[in-house]
Structure formats: C-alpha cells, structure tokens
Amino acid sequence: MTFHLTTLGSCALYDEKGDRVNAPKQALLMLAYLRDCRQSIPRRELAAFLWSGNVQAAGVNLRSTLLRLATATSKSPKPLISGVAANIALNFDALRCDLDTIENTSGVAKLSALSDAVAKNFLPIFGSGSTAVAVWVRDVRARLAGELRTEFFKALNAPSSPQYRGELKRAAMLLLDRDHSDDEVRIALGEKITSYIQVIGETKDPTSSHPAEDTIPLSADGRVPRIALLPPETLEAAERAGSVANAVIEDLTISLCVDRSVSVVAPYTAEQIRSSNDKAGLLRQHNVVYALDTKRTGDGLFAQLIFMPRDEIVWATRVQLDSAAITEHRNEIATAIQHSIIERVGAFHHIVSDFSCKPQAYFAYLEGVQCLSRLGLQNVRRARKHFREALEHERGFAAALAGIARTLTMEWVLTARGDSDLLSQAEKMAADAIRDDSRFAGGFKEIGVARLYRGNIDGSLEALSNAEDLSPHYADVICSHADSLTHGANPKAALAKVAMALDLNPLAPDYYYWTAAGASYFLGEYTEALAYLDRMREPGPASRLAAASWAMLGDAAKAKTYRLRALRDNPNFDLEAWLSMIPNKEKWQTEHYREGLLKAGF
Image 1 (cartoon, rainbow, N blue to C red):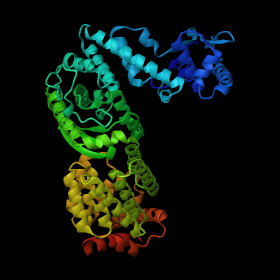
Image 2 (spheres, rainbow, N blue to C red):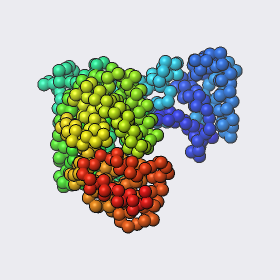
Image 3 (cartoon, rainbow, N blue to C red):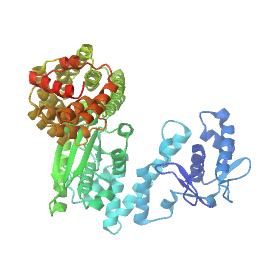
Image 4 (cartoon, helix red, strand yellow):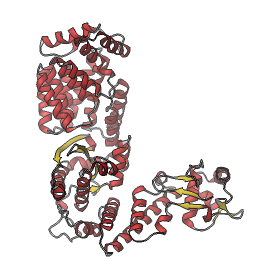
C-alpha cells in the first residue's frame, strides 16, 4: 500500500482508496519534514525540532506520535517510518507527496505545478511564529517561490502558446503578490506576456526600476496598499454560462499588477476570500486594504470598491457585457476601472497610513461590522464589543466611534423600550466621530440616525444629506437617508433611495429590506412590504411590521403568527408606548401603523 501526503493548502494523509487516514498533525508534519530532508534524522534532533517549545517532553511526544502513526497505518505491509533505534527515516516506497509533481514534470506542466504550490501555500497552518518548524515552513515556501521565478523566466524564452501564456500570467501575478517590488517580473508581465493590456501608472520610462514616488500613495511602513479583486463567480460557473465577466476581472488584475501604486492579492487567494464565511479573518491574514467586490447580473458586471478599514463603498460601476465584440472591449473596460480605482486609492492615502500603523484597530472594527450583517440583539452587542476593542488600539478611530453609535440605536429599535439614554449616548459617539474626522460620512450617518429616533427629523435629514454628499456611493448612508425620508412622510422618495442603495450593494444586510418594507407599508403596498421582509436572512426583528402588513391584507392567521413571534422576543411590548416613541413627522403615519398593529391583535 502507498499513502499520499498533501502539504499544499492543507495537511492530510490518504490511503490508496482515497480515504483520509486519522493520523495526528504532528505525525504528518514529521512525514513532510523527513521527505524534505531526504535522509534519516537522529531521534533527539527530530523531537527537538517538532517540539522546540517543550524540550523535556519532546522524546515522550515523539514516541507517542510514532505509535499513533503506526496504528493508523497498520494495514499497510510497508511501514511509513523505518530506521534503527537512534535514527528516524522515511520509507519513500510507501509514501507519495503532492510536491512530487514538481519534481516529475517539466515545461508548462512544471510551471503550472509550481504555481499551484505557491498559490495554495505549503503547510498553511504551520508557518507563523519563530519556532524551528515555522522557520523551516517559511523556508520551503520561499524555496518554491524561487523555483517558480526561475521557471518563469526560463519559460519566457520558450515557444509561445495560449496555454503557456496563461500559465505565465498566473505565475507573474503570484510572484508579484509575494514581492510587489520585483520589477523584472512586472516588466515581463506588462511587455512580454500581455502586451494587449495598457500599462498605466508607470514612470515615463517603463523599463525604469524606480517608480515616481510622488504618484504612489505609500503607507507609513513604505508599502503600497493591497487590493483583492474578488471574481463574480467561479471559473467553472463562468465557463458554463459563457460569461466573460471573470475574464474582465482577470484583465483588470493584470493591469493592476503592472501598476506600481497598489499591491494585488493573487487570484487564488481572492477566490478563497470570495467564498469564505470568515472574510474578515482572511482579509486580516493578507493585509487587504481595498476589496473590489463584483457580481454578474445577466449580461452586466457590477463592481464596487470597498475601503476595508471603514467598510465603506467608495466607488461603484456597472458594465454591460452583452456586446458581440466584447472581447475587443475588455481592455478598455479594465483600463477605465483601473483609472477609477487608482484615483480612489490616492484619495484615501492618509487613512491607509493609519491602517498600516495600527492594523489591529481596523480588523477589530471589521469583526464588528461582520457581526452587524445579521440583525439581533446578541449580534449588536457582540459588534459593540469589537468596536470598543478597536478603540483600545486607536483612541480616535472615527469609524469605531460611529460603529458604537450604530449599535446603540439598533439596540433601541430591537428592545422597543424607549431607552432615551441609548440614543443620547449614540448621538454623543457620532459627534465624537465627526470631531475626529469631519470628512467621514459614517459619523454624519450615525448622528442622523440618532437624531431621527430622538424626534429631530429635519436635523436627521440634514446630517444624512451631508453624509451622502461626502460619500455618494456609500450604500449604508443612502439606506439610512431612506429611513429618515420614510419617517419624514416621504415614503415614495425613500423607496427610490433604497433602490439606489440596493443597486450599489446587491448583497445587502437585512435592514435595507426592512427599510424598504416600512416605506412600502406607508404607501399601502403591503404585498411589496412582505416581499422585502422575505428577503431578510433573519426576519425576526421585523415581525411587528410583518404582522401589521398581513393584517392590512386581511389575513388574520398570518398576522397572528407574526404577532406571536414578536411577543416571544419582546413579551412586555406596549403598543401605545411604542407608537409614542416612533418619530413620525405626520400624524397619519402613526395612525396608519396603529391600524395595522391593532388589526394584528397587539
């Protein structure tokens, strides 16, 4: 029996049938290390390597690990580990490794295998820290990247073919992801591999290795900001649909790789971020400052540039991809988007510097934002904890102050107890955010929301108009503006604003749909209101509005169902007390809502 060890992107051992072997992680690490060393290792030396932080117990741990590995692979007639008592050696006849592909291929196949190795990352869970294992893992990764670079330049002189060009592009982007300053690779990418891509952002002399420093928004530590371009769909889905949306993003990725003013995350990593449930964690891991989120809608491509330190949409566009000659226009589209991105990167230069100095603050903030993607009191309070953690790292962090203000107003809505102290705290926090950064739209957004719930509707609309002027693509601001317009007795204008916000942020959080439902209710469009509520991932907090909408449609049974849900979450709900707290500009709005709630049985 021959076992197969995977070391790229994961660490696992499989038998000949493809079934995973239940072996301890340290045993798999030992196999990878012995394979790399190609020779027997003294027991004491191997134990000290694997358990450098616990030398006294290292010998015992090694014996235990060897025993557990032998037990897990006992069905094989060939033991994986052999050697005399004083030394440990790997039985190469009994083990195959995913790295073998690199050694057993040549030409384009070898270039592809090395690209896979660099993209997936060798033993990803073992590479951090200062232990002997971590140092070795990072050394192997650097070695693989060095081999990829050597093979890359060797392949540049090989006969050109579409397959080769595709692998060369991929290799170049991976190498620039590891070392943005590698101008030899950048020039090769721009001039020899993808000559149809227009190179912008370069110095007057494109062969110069010294960029024009005053045109590049460097961070405080001298590094350019990192951007991740998230593809609209998987490669397989794009091929099935015959879509060129992914191809446009590939062109854009290449053109930004050639540009010296940003550092581009490799496509493999961008795909991982796109599909991950822990986007904040991956963004932290890869130090991403900007994310270009994309989505294919029919024959169109929607793209929005998110400034991650403040979770702010700073630019968005839609591109039609239905032209018969779209392949000829891909470069034009990519170049136009690139111009807009670079312009926005320069506008946020000062905040990028702050991000570089205190990344812990920004990533704690992102954790808080991620919590608020779903409504619910527990999520709101967990988000507030993260925002306070961000303030511990950076005292005057305007976005975190605004985030705390947001959680306080959301708690006021969810608890429905009319706690005025929550709103006064929220307004103070938002005012502090504006004081610390008068150009931050989020501060004006949160003070506008707090003013709304305190009954100052005109003051709310003024603040939200200021926020929208500061950041016209900030979908959250536009949605909050819509909510204030609804309470200001203008639900028709509110619905138009929500539509604009959803256009900018198609993967919207629940409160967008809740806001749209409220505006629809006051327009008498109850079916539409319920359709919006159905799009919420967690519709529980909006159960009162759902009950009122079903009641106005004459469905008493459905109205009762939602009334009971609302009372389960808030058993002490007082209808008249709640109506007295809702800030409506016109009396007819309060009476309209009272009618629906009374019909629902509240």
